Image (cartoon, rainbow over all chains, first blue to last red; front, side, top):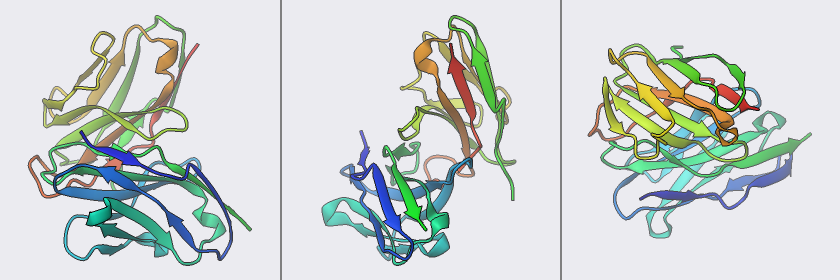
Length: 114
Length: 117
């Protein structure tokens, strides 16, 4: 079975700081990787995804993530955060065959202080 | 932008009562998912439908939970009887693809928040 581990449950940063949120997964086969974001009072939205190809993927709002297969990691990064990035961030994985639903991590609550 | 519709948004019930949640996926989406999200945790898959068939219900507590998608479009998730530990957000998601596919991008609804007293 797949599992996803997000190391930081709560992160507090100041505006303009750089961000990196860790995500590790456990699954021996081909995987698809996702980051979803949940802004306060809103539903889960897709931030970015990795299916294959270039391991560095770019998403919306200046976010990017790098798939490192040897480390089973898919860390989320942003060079300069804004107050509006305050949200809950979830890493998720499903198997490469696509038949499975997503397995989510527990989430990271990110607070950006102005 | 097409959305996944869910109702009700909020439901308060007493334990041992029955509750039902409804989901209307994006038109044309073959696969529908029900997730449960307990406060402070990530969503957990309860059941997955492809068209009208159940693909995965291994995490659905079948003694009290049931789900159906009779015509392969909208879906209902029922809990009977509700227990205190069922308090959570119930999320519906849909995706265009049918298994097996290269990748499955899920679009989520706003959720139904259940409080059991």
